[in-house]
Length: 192
Image (cartoon, rainbow, N blue to C red; front, side):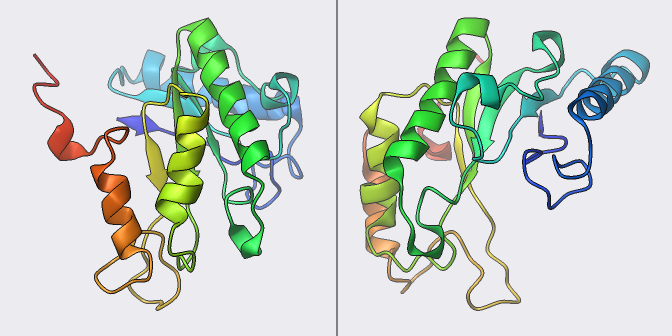
């Protein structure tokens, strides 16, 4: 089970965010959380994922609030801003950040992931192949997974995965069938 405590901590929209807590306090609460769950309660089925938002531009900034390798199993990034939010695309910046995540993971024996992304309402009919897939293929990033955010059943515009008749549906099917992507049906004998 992937557990992402205190995600997007480099923003200021959560109580644990950079605007509300010091680097030292953030690291302390992270270590306390992992220590309490792992060492005191014996919870050993968590993969602890460190996942800032997209505010960093270097490995140094990415690791600014990093609690240490013994406290983290997976590194990732949440990034909507470089991938079309508000009509703004900066795929070069998004790729650079994913490369920082992927390379750090490889150097330190961690898993890497694109822990959250997406384009609300997906108005771009080729977002899946021309934005997301194109970025993932650009540097042959080693990522365990990519997660797009949820579909809110109470809102007609707050969704991140296409559905029948949605403008990006056909492109998602192309994304799905691309040999570079894996979905649940592609995972055979995972536990053997």
